[in-house]
Image (tube, rainbow, N blue to C red; front, side, top):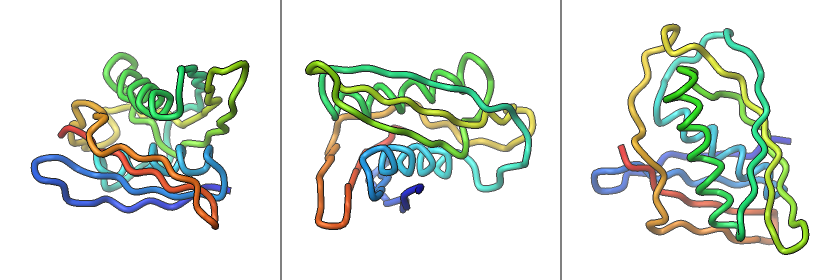
Length: 138
């Protein structure tokens, strides 16, 4: 099950507020929110790719995961869309196993998201699942 997201105005940046039943759903919803901050219309093009990421904590994992998606955009020239993710803790380290569809950038009109920030980042477990908030530098 995929989570939900909403874009939030944030001074000169963009905030992404996401939620999901699982932490992976919330991470994927946040990634899909980042995609929405970059592009309004997404064509049915592109190939699926996998993205394993590991980090020392949940916040670092979210940061690194979103940063890897930006890297995919910048290096492979694809816009990551339709993200899915599972998150787990393993031997004191956090990991996400994610996938997305990489839409070739020449098929979309995309705005630039420069970077993920730690500014105001939050990851909280709620009664109904998980809530994530991250600010993107645009």
